[in-house]
Amino acid sequence: MAAELHVTLCYAPQPRQVHELQLQLPSGSTVAQALHLSGWLQRFPELASNEVTLGIWGKPIQPDAILRPHDRLECYRALRVDPKVARRERFNRQGARQAGLFAQRRSGAKPGY
Image (cartoon, rainbow, N blue to C red):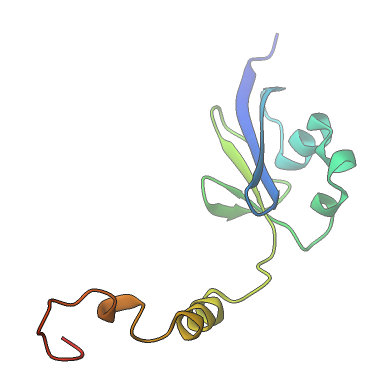
């Protein structure tokens, strides 16, 4: 009898919504087989497209990669906004005096220090 792998699948289809599933797979299973056996390809059809990147413990991988025991298979959706642009817009919305280094000043201190 072949040994079993214990892996964890993680996917966040929307902000603040995380799905996590523990799987027991036959030894030598691939990432694509894990997704198929989990039923997530039917539940989340976007996982079958090229828009979602797959990774194990934060390192990008291909669907034909072989899983090892205790791997954490993560599905990354595409970013909707560049993080630099989002930070810049958030800073502009809050104002220069309300964010970052200038948010807290000692009383009587010079502006910008």
